[in-house]
Amino acid sequence: MYDFDVLVLGSGPGGQKAAIAAAKLGRRVGVIERDNMIGGVCINTGTIPSKTLREAVLYLTGLSQREMYGQNYRVKEDITVADLAARTQHVIGREIDVIRNQLTRNRVSLLSGFGKFADPNTLTVTDSRGRESHASAAKVVIASGTRPARPSTVDFDERTIIDSDGIINLERVPRSMVVVGAGVIGIEYASMFAALGTKVTVVERRDRMLEFCDLEVIEALKYHLRDLAVTFRFGESVASVERYAEGAVAVLESGKKIAADTVMYSAGRQGTAPELELAAAGLSSDARGRLSVDEHFRTSVPHIYAVGDVIGFPALASTSMEQGRLAAHHACDEPARAMPALQPIGIYTIPEISFIGRTEDELTEAKVPFEVGMARYRELARGQIIGDSYGMLKLLVAPDDGRLLGVHIFGTGATELVHIGQAVMGCNGTVDYLVDAVFNYPTLAEAYKVAALDAMNKMRHLSRLQ
Image (cartoon, rainbow, N blue to C red; front, side, top):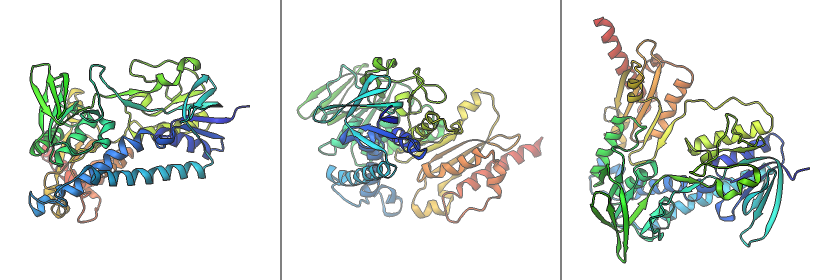
């Protein structure tokens, strides 16, 4: 007999959903998590703090209202870290309460401490006082997540030289910042601090940022970030960082030197799987600390599953939740439909970006014909009301049958609006549906109809000529 039917390592989005799904299926479930990390990195240092910080920045700087009230408009003149932290800590506290409540009402046992394998079915749990206990289970779900990757050549001090987890512990809003890496996390934080008035320099070894996004959208984002005084150094790498009493100097391989109050490394993330004594369970991880799984999220040991960031791409909270649910169903021998291939991506820069489906570059490379339908927020009544004159929504449409091949949005509410396109694409809908649909007025959602009509008119013009 085992202590649990299903034992989950980690209470982040993937672990939490796996535990609750298994509990709903009538299984005895336990979750192993450290006292100060309920909700995992997502709630405590990652997704939720960063998105809450973004909301606080938008509100306190008055950035989204400047189109209406002038470029000097601010809700608060001197914004401090305390102002930003107050909102962040409030939301984190509420989210932790919600997760605790969900686990409790579903009768999921919470085992406080750090877990690692003693054998394939048993985990050793070490609490904050160093006391050890053991828990066994028929099935195990690893949802231990990731941590920021730290180059060994960099001397992090959590004040002057930090990683993305250290942002919420800054003592003050820096006057200048170097962001190393123009990935999603790096660009999100770069845009937030630029909005606060920090002079930001982004260093990226590649020739462009966010290569998986639509090029037109990225060009629009770069324009807005440059307008916030962000400097980009593409095709450059940081050779070393020199720390001084009043700040740091980033030395680039090209010989350039950039002085800043703070240097933030956003060099990807490292899986935590190696910390779990995997050998005791008959498992091993790759060089980035990640585990390999099959289509059911099983590892090479059939009764051990892995979900979330620890299995790599796409490493999103949204996909992790669904992976956790599907892994739990398979572990409990319950049928479940596979995760759809069509999934939205949301990037919480200022302004935000969201898309689903394929990009123009991908379609062109695959020699797939497409027509573009465009709607600009400045042409929508709602865009004028909220003061967003730069936002846009782009539809990529198959000219032969009108199917939507991609939806790309830049501007206010992008991460919410994308789900309309997701629903149409998921139901194999066509541009005709969007042309015929009646949207509330005035709304940003109306952009779908405008973009659909734009695409339809282009296709009709071509048809007439031929």
